[in-house]
Each structure stands twice: as structure tokens, then as C-alpha cells.
Image (cartoon, rainbow, N blue to C red):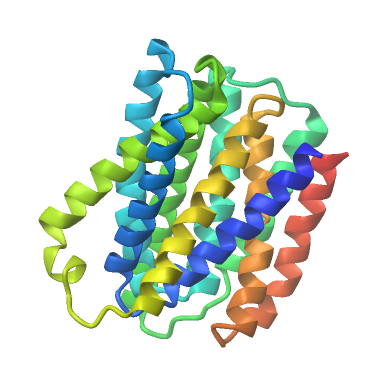
Length: 279
């Protein structure tokens, strides 16, 4: 049941990232995305118990890492295809989380779990070797920001996983994190990306799409945080990154990106790794 919900969260994550990649103005789209997420979090906090004081360090740290993550993600999508950037950034993170988990004793993992997570990352490395950008400078920038995004994902996942376990209420932690990280991002984007945020020509249809992507993001990450109470953080991260499979299909069917079909084999390797984790 837990694994099934995390897999559903993976689909939600792939969906909102695809919506962001396809947006005309990604900065503004992400701002509306985060605004919607912040509003959802604030609404939930009206009916939830207060956050345990010990968890505030993890909330603030995860929120700051999220800030770097959002801008790295925007830059990665600026230079690379969705079907390239998304698998690299999301797929490298589980391996990083596994390494940090082992190094710092965050969780106890079985050999099968660890091998499954490594297999997921092998599939992603296979994806990364597929050349979908002809211009060397743009390719290097895309890969650089994709890997920076992966490190940020590993960081906020580990801090959030540790924080949610001591928070006393996973939903309170999730809602608080959405509000804090959302507020920090909205303020920063308004200061440094003002031209993009307040650009003209924003339609009602675009607003609805961006707001929907924010809700999808909240639900998807909330499910992952809930699952971390019962599963290892690295295993949840790996299951969540099966979104790479959904992303490959989305890129091929809806975004009409080239080379997406060549990534099907790599996606199957990811599925094999996930199967070991489920076992």
C-alpha cells in the first residue's frame, strides 16, 4: 500500500515537472506553482497541531536547499530537454541519498534494497549518456544544472525525512515546509526575477495549469514524507524517482522530444531496481 502510493506520487511529480518544462514563462509558472503550494500548506496549518520545536531546524534547512533546487531546476530546463534533464536530476539523487544514509547511519538498509537503489541509478547513468543536445556548451550547462539539482534533491530529502520523523505529525511538517519554502522562493523570485514574474501576457488557462501543478507537487511530496515514517529514506526516494519512467513517456507522447524512445531500455532498468526494493 505504501509503495503503491509512492509510485502514484512519482506520477504526480513527473506531471508537474512536464507542465513546468512546457510553460512559456517558466519562472512565472514556478512562482504560481509555489504560490498555490504555499496556500495549500497555510490552509492545512489552520487545522493542524503546531510543529514540534525540534523539527524547525530541519524545516528551515530543507527550505533553503529547496530554494537552490528551484533555481537549479529552472536553469536545467532552460538548457536541456525534459527527457534528459529530468531523468538525470531525479535518478542520481537516490544514489546520493543511499551513500549519505550509509555514511551517517540514517537508516539500516538490506543488501537487496541497496542493490535495487544502485540499479535505479545505473539506469539513470545509461540515460545520461544519450546525447540529445548538439551544442556542447548548452549540453554541459544542462548536465551541470541537472547534477546540481540532484544534490539539492538529496539534501532536502534527507533533511525532510529526518525532520518528519521527529515532528510528531507528518502532515504538519509537510504543510509547514510548503509555507516556509514557498515564502522564501516567492520573495527571492520577486526580487531577482521581477521581469519574468510580472511579465505581461499571462492567460487564465496558464494560471490554472500552473496552480494545478502546485497542488500536484504538494500531494506528491506529502505522500513521500508520509512514507518515510515507515520506509527508509533512500528506498522512498528511489521509488519516487520512478517518475523518470513517466517522464520519458510524457516527453515522447506530449512534448514530442527526440531520443525519448531510446530511453525506454534505461527506464526498464530503473523498473528492475524498483522491483528489488519492493521485494
